[in-house]
Image (tube, rainbow, N blue to C red; front, side, top):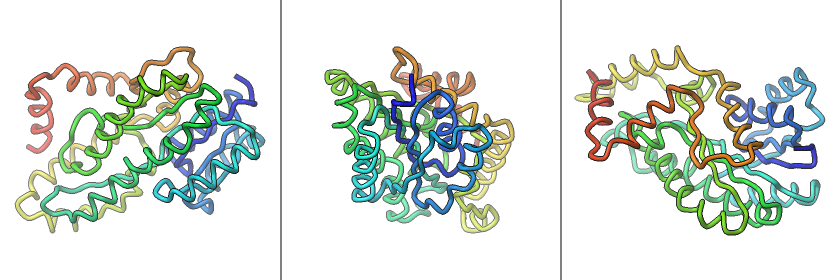
Length: 281
């Protein structure tokens, strides 16, 4: 791979996206690092300088829920670089809550960012990826394979992304485009902090769901205490970006492989439900 190869990565202001942008630049790619608010680029630019890859990273604005923003960004990429070899769909937003206590607008918002944003960016990038015989790499989640308590909207969106990409893969392959999904488990990043979750307020409003929610929060806080670093998770994205024949589905850790494997081998759903119900006791 050389610096002539160009990758566009969404959601690079922090976490996995930031780490992936720096690692892709280190691997010799020209990186178009996008984010909804380019005023939040300081951490990325600092990391790029620390790793001596500032000249390979270009920050651009892209809001995945705004089709005009996507089109403008891609037009600029092609005008400035002449090609697009890979798209990494990384932008996403968490959503914690159970459906009885959420509005439909909350659910729609989760789907807009986590599903429709991926669809829109992929759709817009495909003509350029056909031309370069490139790749679509989408960061989903273990929550795209295992439905998790108090994550109905988030997991629904991630399940939808995985179904979309699994269906797209054989079609895209006929025109020379590879499709890969990357499934992280718990990652120690700002993603969780960015939810803005007020746990005491959430518990106070949970009514009959409060005991289950309290157990879920305790279990989740413990799991994130043993989380991967963003750089560790991003390594799987770089393998998918640079590997000769990457598989369709990639997990970022042994724990994630075992967790996703539970649902893939669970024909009647009993193993997954036994596992996740235990989280609420």
